[in-house]
Image 1 (tube, rainbow, N blue to C red):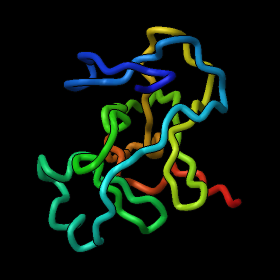
Image 2 (spheres, rainbow, N blue to C red):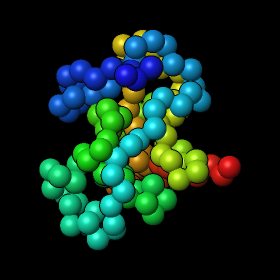
Image 3 (cartoon, helix red, strand yellow):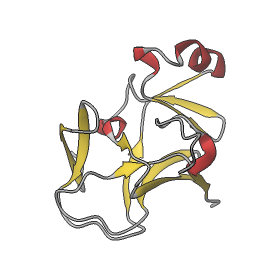
Length: 130
């Protein structure tokens, strides 16, 4: 069970994650988990319902739809309050700013007019070394 969030219906899309309590900027909220798949499989599933929860973790493709956790329900927003950080080939959702209890932590790829609107885009990932 997640320490910082719960899953409920979202006005953004389907289900979403909501803060159980106030979350401070810089807090690691959750690791994005799932089955590791090939780039070819990711490309094949791209833009299909089955490819909905695939993220590119520094060239490692994680399918949150298979063997994933509830982190796959974090929704996109161009007014985001969450970003990703890669540490030791693990993909973490981190609070970009303080998040209030009951708020929906959301992520955004780039904030530009070309924003793809979903998680599988590398432009918002912060690469953190050991």
